[in-house]
Image (cartoon, rainbow, N blue to C red; front, side, top):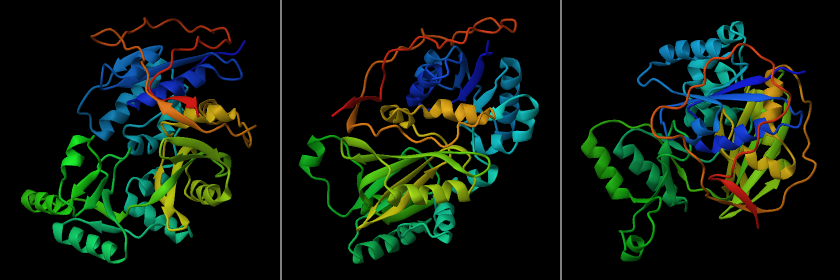
Length: 373
């Protein structure tokens, strides 16, 4: 009888409830126990976990590493999937290994390269992966100069933080004034150039932004699973064009993604995004973590979270080819249970037991459920 696998996800995205569901519904029928921590007591990942805790606030990266090591020791964590303070955590991989915990995360060098988009663009350009033209700006005058240069070349400028995730801070620069039709609709990403320049000048503080052309769809997000031997085990592209989503194995997208994953030590799960500049794909972003939409690969008959856990535990799944590519689909929001108000539940610490090798019951659908088109 196989022992259960204990997996911990720290302060992660709500969509990772699906990551957790897939671990429980693994094809090997291995029993999985999931621990989750978060700063928000209403995070759905806490309700979806077997055990849950609120994370302490205000910890420095070094203090958080100590907190994480204590969690792994007390909870008997086999695989830790870090998002918060990933850079600090992977720098202490040997200490986690000594505690019996494998990190499902890339090398410290890979995290350092791609923490900042400007550094990442320079790195991938050096190995021949196309990147869009970009300017790193810190002042209003630098922003204006970059926008004017892009506009002269026929592009619409956009701006985003040099360090960030999930599209936070992304804005499309416009010179058009706000119109009544805009005010009658939903808020959009457009922001007036003069308003941005005025805000920068009034703040008196430098920023760290990238200015680049607004890239065209389709957006292709390549999910990769890479071993510590720098060989990719899985690479599947998820396409996005408006509401329509789909899958691709086109080497225009997969070949540069493999080059990045293998060349920069993006071990375990990573997500590499591309968009179009004219008629060619260019890099948009590199995420040194699993994408929130990773579970959508289940429509191709692939359980990527479980393959990643197996790899982290030293059970190499080998090269994974999707048995088929799922049909086009869209994403809908739906309800997901939360814990009762108050602190997350805490189960008493049990004595070490071996659970039956059966998956936990499936949980109801939630935000991000995929439906066919």
